[in-house]
Length: 387
Image (cartoon, rainbow, N blue to C red; front, side, top):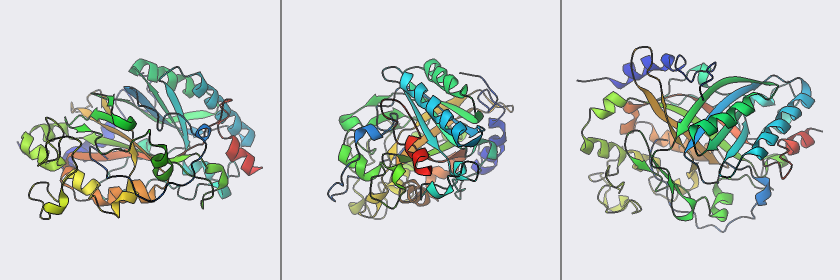
């Protein structure tokens, strides 16, 4: 049976909001692929570890929830109270649990007098060529990412955050990591719902010099001084065309991704961690020129600067009103420059073979606040800069 991707998936987007995880529910964004090797430039002076929130480079547990909010608190004092309360909730998280707060471009409008302090690269997420964005699932003044060992606990942490006065939820999405494990250097692995293992090319989160180079905003850059120790968060809600994908034989799926399905090795290689040999495959006879891993990271000196730290989860909601499976990827990544990182990778992916099987419908760009220290006083540096 032939199923055309765009009519199928575009017709599904509106049904997402009607599922059990829509904005009013109380039920407890780049697909798989690799990145290249670290740059050889000497590492810059790192920001102090205490300036970072947990939930970025910490080991991702098996379950998560990401929720976006409007901030309805009145005045700067009200905003400060919201951020302090969220910081206190983060401080209460148990071992292996995290609550991470990021802010969107809309926070820097006229309400709180923060326009001059907006992170320089923080904008609303644009619609890329393959997107069909649903406004009900996009943007927000603030996101809360909660991570825990079980979906129930991640949802419980999220529920505590949602009860902070001055927040109005826009959307929420739960996630889980099939086959979740951590490899050398803190590199996180999982298996997505297309059945392919991902993470071999992800950054090593335990490499602090690499994190300072690729992920954290450092002091002394062109960013506002208060942003040091923070990072740019990208969230993408991506629905998978599961019937279309499942109808294809495994060899075709492997050609689309560029890896074997049984052991995650790049095509033509033996092991998952082997580096694809693009130099000896210029015409894409082994790994197609439009395969996901080749588009995501062509392994050139230029593409090294666009490496990102991926921390994604799968999602699976109730079937929609038409009976179609509602499942996909809760894509989350971090970088010190969203244009140089995610946006550059996304433009390379346009026209890839995987595009017909996926539909990005929501998410946004956000800035993960610097850590609040032992007191959990999130937003203190931003509000102090505002005077």
